[in-house]
Length: 203
Image (tube, rainbow, N blue to C red; front, top):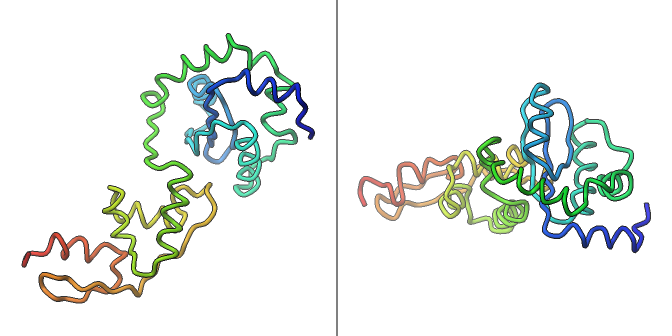
């Protein structure tokens, strides 16, 4: 579909709007500007999970359809931007946007979004792990302030699964504790950081 000058003008009028990519587990993947209303409308259909927050309507439209296909859901015939800007222009008037922004102010309290990392951060972390064989999941967990299991799931793609690029965890990495001298294999599992290093009893 062609993005005309008129459509670009409508995008400019949107201003600083956040587009929420969400999943109704087992049902669908969609995009909304009004998260609180979407939660209310979908409350009987299953758990709503926020997959990401975007400020570019064209980017989120493309990602939405990709994830719909990857997860086996119905893939929308028309991209989200076309639905909003062409088929339903009243949803992006100044008054409508103001109302949506106001309704989203309490989204964290009502939905309980606990996602710590943005899409960009997830990609950076996975690349950091993949490109440096001396870096373990435990080291990255400590660096970014999360548990080893959480970091392992993030790297492998079991968490943030909508973001492509998961990396298989290395199980052969070994680290030597500077305090007791023990060599711990499989440090990515958390054994080294749980019992050695800064937590070693001989420190």
